[in-house]
Length: 241
Image (cartoon, rainbow, N blue to C red; front, side):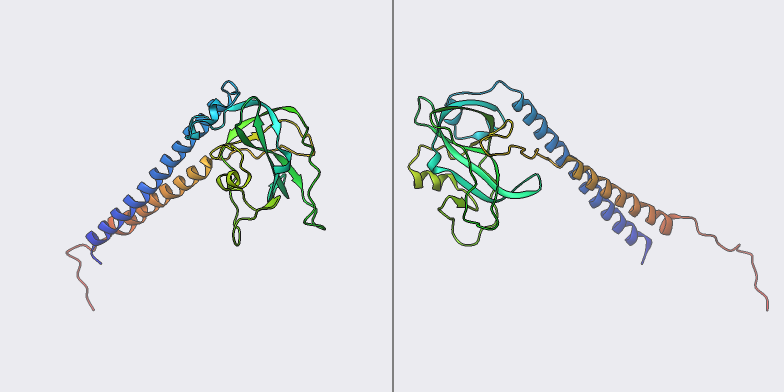
């Protein structure tokens, strides 16, 4: 293979791996911006009432702290199955909260409770005080969905929860684009050691380093095999038998 063919192949390969490395750095920068924006939101003044629920775009209020007063709608509590906390499998417990002096209802991710693996239909004991309660938390998107065979379930124990469908099912004036993750120490039979958001910035830096190393390897191998000076025989050398 001629050297210029190898040169073109090496150039294209190096350009590709180099561009992939810079793409990973851009992804890392985007996620760093996300983490900074989340930290700013978390340190903002807590929201109250229901004004923040009225907007359809949740991005402006995500991760903001909230301090709510309302009443639990305990008979509509949902237990999301196969959810982990502290490396143990159990339920995420969600209860609708009707905000005081309004008809607005927001779904609160109240915490985690263990599962009875002997009697899988048995629900954990969760206290839901009657009357006005104060809830401190942060604004979040609806719970992530797990793989589910068949259609959505409608009982207290569910694999996933679609808020739009739950609003129709219950007739509640439920916000469908945001929830509240309750924070604070364990109480009411629930743990609240919520996992920290991991943006994966280090992962992208690692991928970028791998792509840049591959670029250097391609350039180094081309230089070694194609551009290094090869020894040659003197022109006046004669061979005799």
